Image (tube, rainbow, N blue to C red):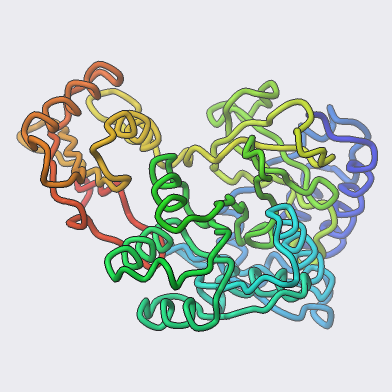
Length: 411
């Protein structure tokens, strides 16, 4: 999907602002002698920006608008290295709320919904983004924030919440807790807006059935406003994204070259109107594809496929490249397994070993199931993992994101 003339004009406006401010990317452009782009061919020659660039700009090297126009900062939730600080102008905050309101409307929400928000508030972009979009929609906000499941369930029942905003991990935990307590008849949820982590079809089906709700994938990242830059519609054929605010490319992660529409690659995002910290050709490391053609819902906004993982999720085992999504695809073929799994990779006696922990109920033969799963992985991926079957509920649940891959080779 080539960049349009209108989008190029907006990129040139951002280039001028970046160069004038002397921000990290402005300096990069100045050194390259670039002050504008005339064509799609020029655009794809622009240098990429990376998370490491943003960390090196700490604390305020990304600030492109004058400081008297900066009204807020947010920070990425990364746990390694320096944090990334993203400054926002009042217009950035408003633009983000407009995009988020679009997400809610795309999911069929109205001002009569009661939206329970469980992601975190503060430097992280999640909670406050969910709230701003809901307030713009005119819905009733129940700003719970993370954790305290007891209180979450009490408020969900007493306030008759109709929409749950959460990570998939926390939605799973709540669904299991509601079933365990036998309070499903007191729950009035009709929709779930789920973001922040990749999740498989098995987990989606489980949460949807246990809570009796429609689920929507919301997309976003702190560097690019936050959650709310894309969401799937009722037809669930990919996530619509707001191309009047963002230009998305899909590139080959190894070469950085654009790939044809429909082909899997890395999402690269350019912010078209962001003032506080505009980003040009930002490599997200998220893996997806452009979905060509029009959607049945009639929306003019283009679509990307479900995010299948990250380029840095890849595990190399015995010379084979493996993504968690490949393991999930295999596990979902076993109806007796729950949606939860854990992968542990070790280096024992001079060789790499993968252990896969899976959950099932007590009515099946654990040893046979472990053997069947191990054989299926061997057939599909080419090596034999050690599979350990445990009872449902043994693997950890999380109020935030669940860590499903633990690489012990470098501990």
